[in-house]
Amino acid sequence: MTLPRRFVARSLITALAFGLCAPYVAGAQPAANQTPVVVPTPAPMPTTSGTPIPYPAYGTPAPDVAAQAQKPGVPVTVTLKSAIDIAVAQSPAFASERAAYYQIAAKYGAARGALGPSLSASGSVDRSWGRSLSGASPSPSSGPNSVNGYVTTEQGSVSVSQLIFDGGHLIEGLRSAQFADVAGRDTLLRQLQTLAFTVATNYYALLEDNAAVASDNSLVREFEINEQFVSAEIRTGAAPRSDLAAAQFETAQARGALVTAQGNQIAAQATFATSLGLDADTLIQPTPLEASPPQVKILSYQQALAEAFKLRPDFLAAQATVDSNKANLLYAELGRVPTVTLNGSAGTGRDLVYPNAMTSWSPSGSIGATISLPIWDQGLTDYNIHVAKDQLDQAVAGLSTSRLQVQSDVRGGLAGLISARANLVQAEAEVTSSTVSLQATQAQYKVGASTITAIVTAEANLATAQTSYVQALYGERLAEQQYTYALGSSDLTL
Image (tube, rainbow, N blue to C red; front, side, top):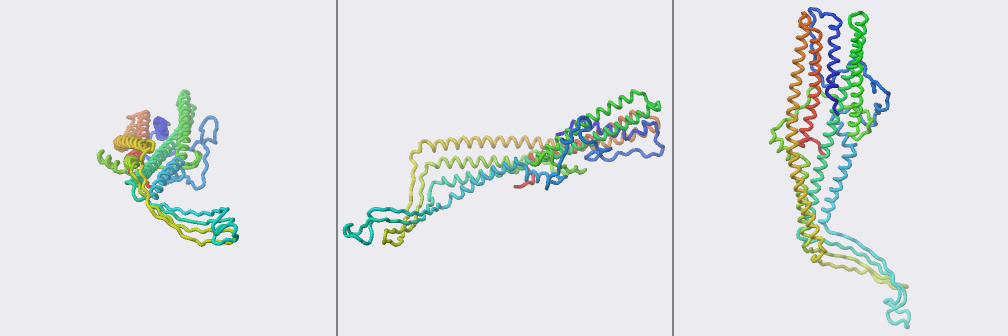
């Protein structure tokens, strides 16, 4: 989340105004040989002035809300890359997407196995009783070659079958599963890029909120010092008592802004931690920005669009889904084609006749071919074809939608990055010009050609320019992330 600009601007303006012009307000003229104040180049994060005020700065104490705990194995300070790595390992949302892809991959693996032969083995032991044939006749009354007793039959066999012809039905099913696997993998990669973009957005939002709290903290300290200064002026008769009320009003207003900024910071901290798959109270902070952000190459719209169509995983997934559904439609249509299967089996068995006869193991086997011709299946094949056609129409529409979305994202991301960089250049120019203006106003004040009000105004302009620079710097970073996300040119891999 981003704090309203007026909070950051007011903080920086007031901190600089009272910090720089306090000697002038006290009535002390600068020496003739005094070096003019040179304001340094603005840094990405404002420098905190004074002791930080714990949350809540004012109001009902709530230490448990702001409390943070370091988690085992989680660093306290992280770069953007390490934050993304943590999110990939910890985020339950990405874990769910990964599990969904594994299901698709498993289906493709099973479809590939159907190309090979089917092999099975079986064995049985059966016992029967009654009049049974045997090689001996223990009693003449029972008739030749027959006895009353038990017969145990033992046998085992191995069977193999191989599909010989189905008109390409099995191959089309395999192609459909293969394209579905490609689409699933590309979808997972886009989910990874989305996770990285979300982490980056929360990363920079927390940095900006940290900067807002630091500057508002400085503001409160400066106003408190100003109150003391006004009180001293009143005691010496150099200022009316009404000035103290005005100073107290400004202090109270600054304290309220600080409390709001602290609350926003805590919320941003929780959002950042949970986007990494960590508890909301995890002690983890982003590394402050460097003064010179990295630059990504800006392409023309047509170049960027061509790049996105080659790289965007979601667009590639939409194309693979269309190919998968085309193969699935042909698979359904080939359901009417006859199939030829080669079958073979080999086994052995023997008989054990109670009480004293037993046959030896005798082998057996068979080989043949089976042809199956579908004639009527109660309309099931017609239904499968109809569903496959509808799924293909949906996939084609999804591809068109994805193409339009890529165009919109690329155009918006490109324009946003160009504007953000131009804004950053202008913000730097504003800092330079406001610095020169402040120095000129201070020089005029030395010779009595200007007033303390003009100095305060010049300092306020400089503070506003510095605030704009900080916002432009964060804006440029976010615009780079948006542009890279629109092109799908991230270096993330599965």
